[in-house]
Each structure stands twice: as structure tokens, then as C-alpha cells.
Image (tube, rainbow, N blue to C red):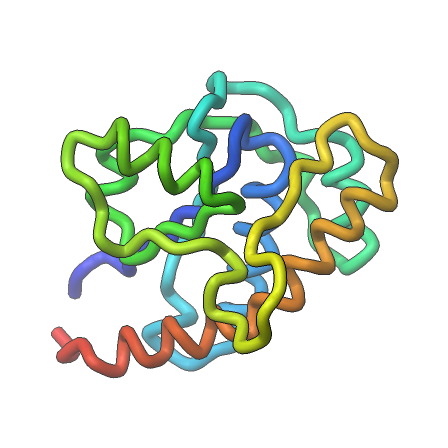
Length: 164
């Protein structure tokens, strides 16, 4: 049996948005049938240093919805992550542009986290870094709002793939 696919959530430093997005999406996928349940969601940053702790407000914002993010440490986005990813979900257009510019092999499966939402409006999730808890909670809520549309996109993507 092949290893489960990976989804990579991406932000700048990998200490606020992308760790929250990864935890929320992993939680949502855990409630889905296979093969979605086995997908691994990781996070990374386009300008991350390895080993930095997650921001305290990110921990608190997710604790309020029952998820523990306290053990997360930052990691920089690598070409290997891009190559292995079934799906790459960025927080902003600038993250996507940076990846497409810097990658040795540009991924075709790169989207914004809120890109699949049907309504018009802002598809980017702003950086809460340094802001009060309510800014982190607003970012979390924007992610939560986007997750059903991401799950539906993943379902169609994996339904089109033949089983191994």
C-alpha cells in the first residue's frame, strides 16, 4: 500500500496561520472516509526558520475549538515538500507567487486556502502576527469557513484517482 498523500499549508513564518490551518484541516479530514482520513496535513513557511515555537495566540485560538497546537515548531518549505504534496494551500497570493518563483519545479496543485469558496470576497487570510487574540480568532474563523469547500475539492480530486 502506498503512503497516504500529503497536503501542505503555507504561510510566511509557519508560526501562526499555516499551523492553525493544518490542524483544522487535519481534524476535518479525520471525520471523512478513506482515503481522505489518511491524508497527512503538514505546514511550512516560505520564510520560516526551523524550530521556532508556534505563537501563543495561535495556541489559544485553537484551544478554544478543542485543538492542541502547543507542540508545533516551525519548518521552512522545501522542494521535497512541494514535490510530495497532493495539494498546497497558501494563505495569500504573495505566498503562491513566492513558491512559483523559487521552486525548482513549480507545483501545479497550488491554491489559496479560501480559493474554493463559492462566494466572492477576499480569498486571502491576513497575518495575525503580533495582533491581539481576536485577530487570531478571526483568522481561525476564516479558515474554518473555508474547510468544507476544501474537503469537497479533495473529494473530487481523490474520486478521480484510481485506487492502488
